[in-house]
Length: 472
Image (cartoon, rainbow, N blue to C red; front, side, top):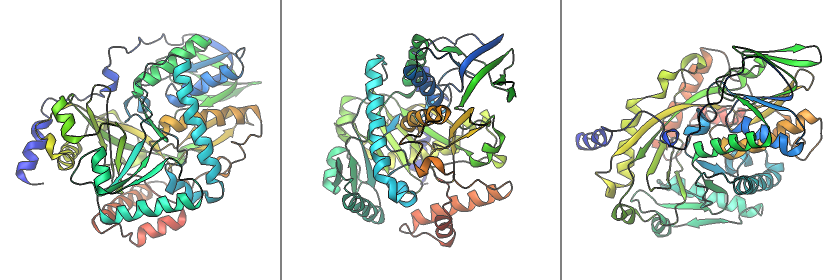
């Protein structure tokens, strides 16, 4: 990094608060009391992020008489669900390309189910009056290198061949810069309907309120410590009590699953983001961006960026940090060297915004699996269901995962449970130190590919053939 660029980036961070912007909202609800007794219910949901909140709410929608209890280790939405970029995507497969490579025969069905799922989220936001700045503006994947432009054209051609290109528009250099003006943009692929933008914490808080209004009993600061059988029930012990439930749905994602054999399928990845101060009218005009789409570049080490309701720019991604041993630790939520790198990249993308300052800088862990998209299953003779591995695209797909868990617990055969994606699991990650070494080699190789016209080395080609990966 040149000294002047480093100075500009460093100065822009001088007032950045080390907390997630979204969670500082004055509308944040008060925490609910912890469980201090023995609860009995039909369905216990463990986890108060999107996965658990959608599961509890949909369970009550399916059967309002069902006794549903939800426990959360801290407060609803405090972790990945409340501090992400707020991209609510229709894709259930972590993008069209990943879905095509893994489930080509059922991709059309997966795309249809994903579109219906996003429509259902939009309808629920309206039905429950959830004030979460929901904007269905779509997303543009932008190319910043010639090889990325070629890849976007090939992706569009594949979508056309499969009859799945409706709502997709290829943009040349002038067209993409008319949407958002960066000298680094060479073209783009605009998915006009497949992505909505939301205030992620407000969405979680709104779902919590909807659950309470539906009769779900919610206990916060109530961590599930272990899961055992207790006669005809499942028992989950908590710090001050326990819950006896006929069925259990686990929405713990990045945190260690109460079903131990599931833990080897996921690893935590730390992702980081910056938020600018609100842009002035002149600053916003200098970059265009009148249609407020979400944006993301097409590199292996990619950035994602979007406008907030008050015209701040969230700028995140690029670094993906895996901690040795896969432990989730609060001290990893802050990483100044990544913030400096992100700030320098920001001003390279939008040099016309030199002088803008960042108000917030934060990070946190998400769960990823070797196929980059959620997997599902049951335990304890079908009385426990789980969904995990969303790899950063859980804002939308978590609702689909909730429906899958409820289908599995009901024993129903549905269009969801018949999917190969649902029936099969990804390959597990190896134990340490092999996981650390393999992920490190993959990250190095991805960076090399970005610097070498997208050319994937032998390691990446081998990982591709094995269906293994590590998403940046």
